[in-house]
Image (cartoon, rainbow, N blue to C red; front, side, top):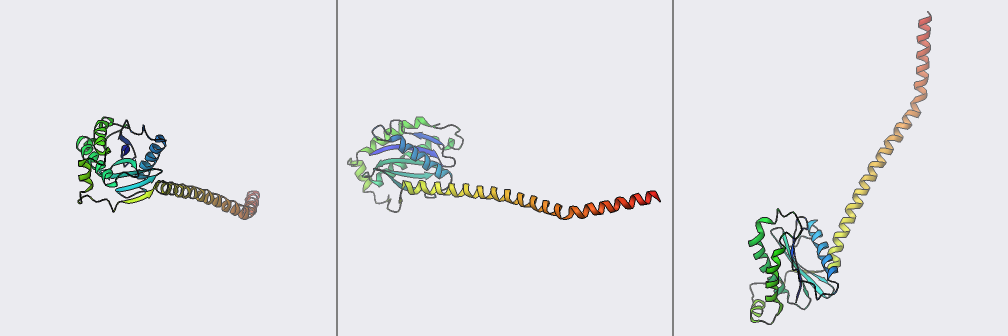
Length: 218
């Protein structure tokens, strides 16, 4: 069965809509929603390039599609047919693009299209029972194939993003430290030059002063 549905803008991870009644029968539903938000953050950072993917998480599986810089994601039981999950997302995508497509880039606040929940709930009901004639026909539709859509583990997907963030932070820190060391090295070189040439400058200064005094006396 379909458990959760969320829609977000890929460019910055901004949530645009979700199923308001989703997750009521899911234990630890908030944890899974946090995983979805972390996934959206990874997508916004460019850590995952696949436009369609399935991601295993506990007894469930996330399925998502990306179209027009918008990510449509649902969480289903592992036993729920992958083919139906992606056709469900396609139905959401088509309607969302038709109704809100021109406004997604300019949306400035989270859940700006929360009214889309009405369509989400209506469509979800159509896909809940896999044994209906309608859904059996969709499962038998040979023109819609999902075999090539990659399946990965949620820790693997989110871990890649975390590791890339760590590498980026480490690189920034090393760059900052290198600049500090370079500045210190320049200061040390300057001090060494001063210690080396200061006595010579003093001697020359004394000689010049004596010469000047001598010329004044004569």
